[in-house]
Amino acid sequence: MPFGEYPYTIDDKGRVVMPPPFREFVEDGMILTRGMEGCLYVFPLASWRRVEEQLEGLPLTDAESRAFVRFFYSGANKARLDNQSRVSVPQTLRTFAGLDGDVIVAGAPGRLELWNPGRWEEAINAVQHTPPKPDLLANFVA
Image (cartoon, rainbow, N blue to C red; front, side):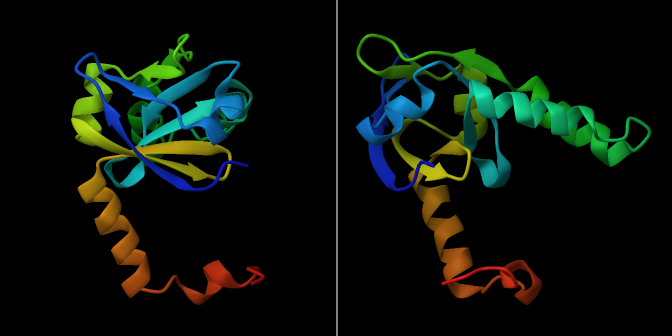
């Protein structure tokens, strides 16, 4: 499972170097898509297959489910690391996530996240100052 956060830069062509600890995680290819809180999710292909199964299991008759699938799935793009361990982020996803210049590459369970540094700070501060709901932590072992 990937963990940690790494500050990097996205170049003028929309490429970001994948931090060394994350390269093996996505070496067989990846799917980049819109994430929550304005970040991008990066799933290795094996994890993406499980995500697809979950999306396919959502009820087609439910408007909120359809909207979420549309949001998540229509933004998906397949990618691979190039010879310099960079991933190319499509312009539509860069615009969505506000990625221009600096970027935070962060690990998360089953995926990576690409963040605009300002949004990253806001997201971290929000959790730091507002503890999660008790039921969310019911099975958390520290």
